[in-house]
Picture 1 (cartoon, rainbow, N blue to C red):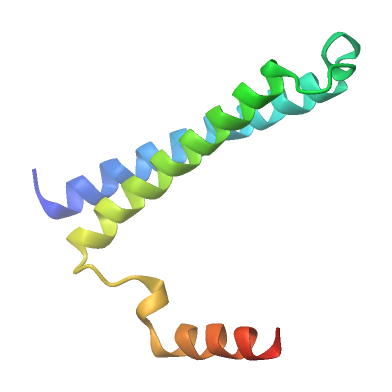
Picture 2: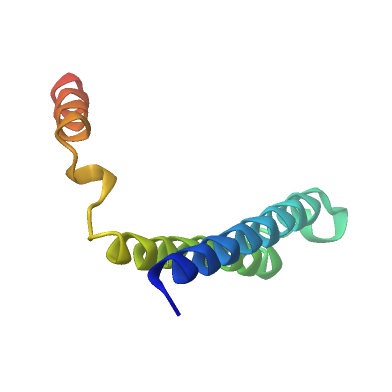
Length: 93
């Protein structure tokens, strides 16, 4: 498999994960609005849906790191303009 094919496949998977994550987000809203679950102080159902979201987010990011490594390992945070913007934000805080 060529680098271009790997990047294309990884990007397609990232898209699919993004779509699933959106559905998990909708489920989380439904759980929060559910009268049966909403009255609990620490609802297990909501906590697990939030964890599912975080794991999907992490999986999507990891596939992005695959793409990044194939493209030479340059992170957007390594660009001088981004570093300058981050430094400005920190200075203003």
